[in-house]
Image 1 (tube, rainbow, N blue to C red):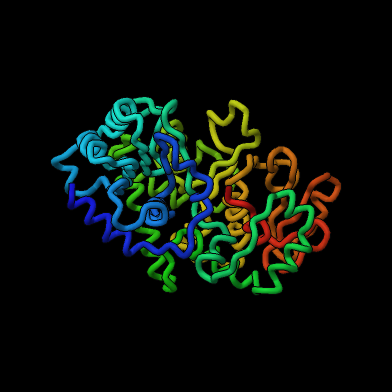
Image 2 (image 1 turned 135 degrees about the vertical axis):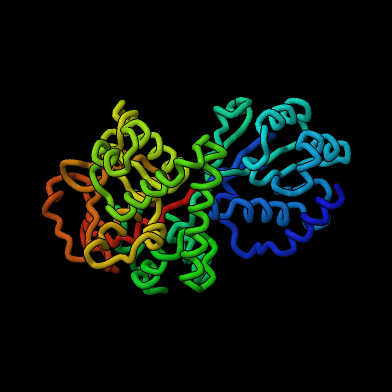
Length: 402
């Protein structure tokens, strides 16, 4: 066990703490059991190590952070670790990438029941299923979700610009004041375009091509490793899921015809629906419905988007003809973080919380289509200032992340 503490110290020494995600303050770290889920690469491991470093320091033995793919766990169980750690006066055990440990939920449940004074934090894939795992932890575990960077967080991470977060009502009620505060410090359109290409995942190091390679590797890991392990997808069918994801990327947001999609991929209609749901859970797709509460959600989505705009760049070179896809993908990604987003088939593009209607388009996008509808707005690309109900698209990227 000494080796685990030594490894922890080395990892903490390399962990920066200058910038911390807002989720750090949202999490109730004092609960007995919490989980942090999110897509691969969004920064879950960094957040956990930052918590340890900021709250315990490098040399504390009251806390222990472990990656569960460590060779230590080929010969020792996490239940055994918890017992020894508790006997030594340990107070907080953080277990990273718990989905890589076979039978994790049963042992976590036993740790929870046998060591009530020991706090346990687990992290894992967005596919991690707390409710339907081998042991139901839903009543014991407080779950948290970690998304990628918002545009506001990107400005903080990569340009040292700390803008306040706003509610959606702030943004639509006072857009000119917010725009003025931002434009005073930065050229928002230029930095927003950079964010759309390389800003969602916090591992951009200045080289766009390297970023895209790392992102593509992350996507392949999710498809080839996590889906088989966490959704029992047979390896032989991963190729079909890759084809489905690529089809969705190259086709752009569109109204879904499952029958045509089934024929194109040579798989059954029900299998297509299952795979779409898996890709949504894996945070590679966003599935929109005309009525988020209807039983139609059990059948098929009404429109499909890639989960975030960065993913578009690893499948195709965007042109003027499909730049609208980028804007819509960003809007759905951002608005879905805190709101219910429904696809609008009649007027506008998206209905948010049953209250706000948004139309996404370029600088020349007109307002005629939704002008007669209360609480309706155009989100326009390539625009710095808000004029009336026509808002810059980047503005919704400043919304609160909590």
